[in-house]
Length: 400
Image (cartoon, rainbow, N blue to C red):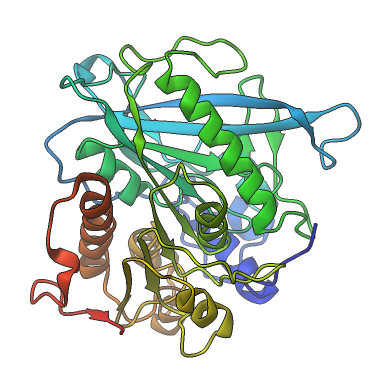
């Protein structure tokens, strides 16, 4: 399994530190995150928030533990099969009886903190709009499905703004932790962290994602795919529409999304958040299903792999780009880092290095609007935002 250089080590280290800082209320300057400095800091968490979803429905969520008995996992040691944690997000009802879900599981978050040199008990995750285990809101028809794949050394919560937005508009969204390239927590308390150096490439992600698609078929058929047979939220079984499945990913996960669409007819539309499209063998298969690139640093002009993939899109295609965006601008980082910058004393220069010049408010509006518009157009056949530039989003350019 090849190692893909999607993000250089300097940036990745800083990104991990910032991901930790997002949940820490300590006034620690960036680059001074030693145990000594953290130990003397205020342990109270920063009051960080995610953009609220705009849809008409409350949101529910549940985590599921999946085991693939047909796939030995060489990274887990002899005798171990591939295991994944996923979360299912959906329109819900009667949510007042169910607590809201944290952005990351507590044990996985503590592992992330320790990995970055912080004390394990100085953080609290932002609270999401999802209510744990709430019943599914059913309207008589099955619900369209969207699957999300994260980037390298990341986690399945990294686009929660987009995920809970889709769920509030009536989608079931399945987010996947790619074990050993994610900070992940299993129901029995086991933690897995990213392998160093990375051991999974986009095609490894693809095998995970196609296995998850199989488990989505189980849910649609009324079966419970959870390996521990934990109860599912009321109404989830049989709620998913297998004729309306989309997929999106960020960075390495975006490349995996592209591969899945070239290999698996079950996915009807794909969306890339700044995917490098670097893989072996290269992506040279024609793809006639809808695909949209939301580019930033990995644009077609500077990256031949992205341009080559674009040239093989023979169906509906769009390439949009937000002015001032950087690699993580379509993820929760774009909203959370500016909030924490005030807490930790980050300089304007360092803030620009991580979030570019795209301000948090328009970035959040873009995240809430464009992925929803893409899946509405291709899974529900409605909407016009993607017809061309909109005066409501002056930052967004359509690249021919």
